[in-house]
Length: 528
Figure 1: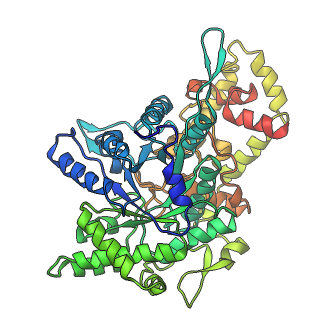
Figure 2 (figure 1 turned 120 degrees about the horizontal axis):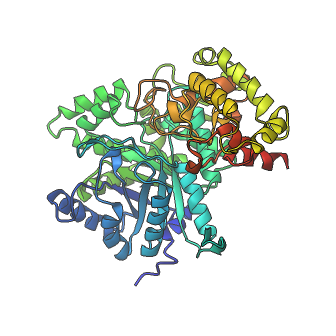
């Protein structure tokens, strides 16, 4: 019988530096546990459960935006057989209430290892496309779990009684999207990773990618920021000609595979074994690279048979200890003009430790920068500093005016009219009542971000474009605006933000001046 309160062996596994444990991704299926495809998945999961070579099984949550069997269904027999399980938990399908409820369920059943994800945008399903939720994001979800681990304080009853709930034991992880092409899409991902760590992430797994230099750069960034004490897991997706084509066509949000690598994959796919040996060896080489670079563990995805896993692991085991350096030079599939934060070592092809990109360090604007710095941005900044800094400028006067209004939540009708008109015209305001404009370089996350991301970009952009709509990601634009002023590293100083939906339809101006929204509370805390 396992101890559901202290089953935290993954933390111990990842803290061991003398071995390179392997986790395997188990993709859930659509249908009940008796469905034919699910039975195949259950058979695969049984092999993983009883394998001494697999340290943990990681189970997806509606991957790719598809509706699938909840991961707890597949995870329960694995966990109760004594194998560590990582449950993926995404924010696209559930609001914060449902996420909290799900976390209590997971904790009660002994699932403590959680990978916090914002999630993919839903695709076509039953009777069309579902309405996405995205009430909170991965940063806020990590924050919630951290509070639950401390003992969540809740208010109940008409007497507003404060109660502290029993502490949970979540070992939470997060994803790093380190394979972005442009400076203004890569750096915000690193800044968001820092916020994830600050919000409670205890381990990191990188996004799927096929460039050893970018894999090394992630570790160098963490060293630069003195965050290299966290275990980082190297993500290896086992390719096939079909999957390589999908990745190359950017059909999977956030995953990049170059034309050069796709050409190699298609050529190998024409061989008698359809490239099976090549793809297994390619995966083994990636594992060897991650081990050699100093990643704490490896993670295999895209594989559906235990025989394939054994072959990959045997191949990786057969390599000499220094072979990874040769493989690192071989697997350098970046694209012409791609931005790297660190200078390249010409001998290894990897990053030069600690040597930051000279052009970036000088603060020279990238080609995206000037077009995003508009007159409207400068005007918005000026008005914001005049009216929305606690205790400064016109803020004290506006506070008194709102306090005397018939409906303080809306402010005087004339002021509400000006607010609604100006913000609708300038920002396509959605009247959320809990405004983040001052934190997103005056780009509205409600109207201009498909996932309403307030704590940095999701990982799903395609060459700087939103994965859902064909426009530039607001966080790339926000980065450009702040870099132009030499403040790009302050892009996510405001995070974490958890929007109060109870303010929707009220005046965000009045809410700030009367101390009701998140921005006013942070401003007050900063000035005190």
